[in-house]
Length: 291
Image 1 (cartoon, rainbow, N blue to C red):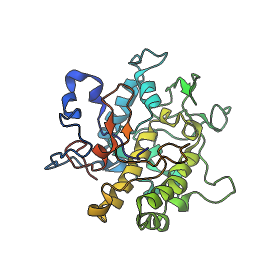
Image 2: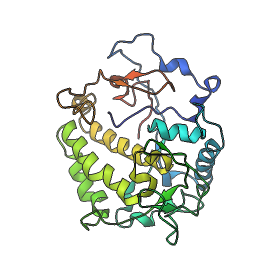
Image 3: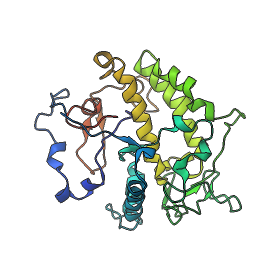
Image 4: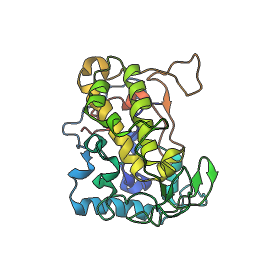
């Protein structure tokens, strides 16, 4: 599965307020030419937002948690997003700025961020995490956990070491990022990203973040946008070669079938399914954004 998915925005949940037809090109060829965006919007790092803008973002997520599920599930619209498990937000968390103290990042601020760690005196709920008790999502009650119905509090369990006791912070520091961006091929880049950065951040946050239901935590979307951000940076170093470079296993259990840009991204009826080739270039007029 490609790291990058559609930057669609919350508006597309209501067809009247979104240009849905733009997502379904008439020419369905795998490499159909798309007009490049003349001035694509720039995705911003969380701390580049004004305090009021941060509040508007967290308020919007809270609003989703109060609207009935689009799929008719026993949950909310926010639970639909979590089940879809795709990166949708247009803001990213550059955790390379916080590598010396991940738990101390301002992204965990209780007023202008996503709230902090789980209650240290509370019981373990899921994923070795405890209930988040401050910030805008203290009252968030996801209804799914690892493919099962389990209504629970949003849970986190910050930790600063991996299972064998090595500090997690340096994995997100300058030396590690420099190594990542020097990877010569997509498959080497993807392995380095997935095994040394992506998964370790899920462990650093824990709770809901340490499971297949990681999207229960709103910071999930900013974390995955950062992964997309670093992929975009890697592509820019040699656009002619890297823009459509892709590979690896088609699925986690594949043994012979190699992934290809003609493979399909499935969106569960949210929007039209599309070939991966359509989302490899963020500035091609289909996604239309840059960093």
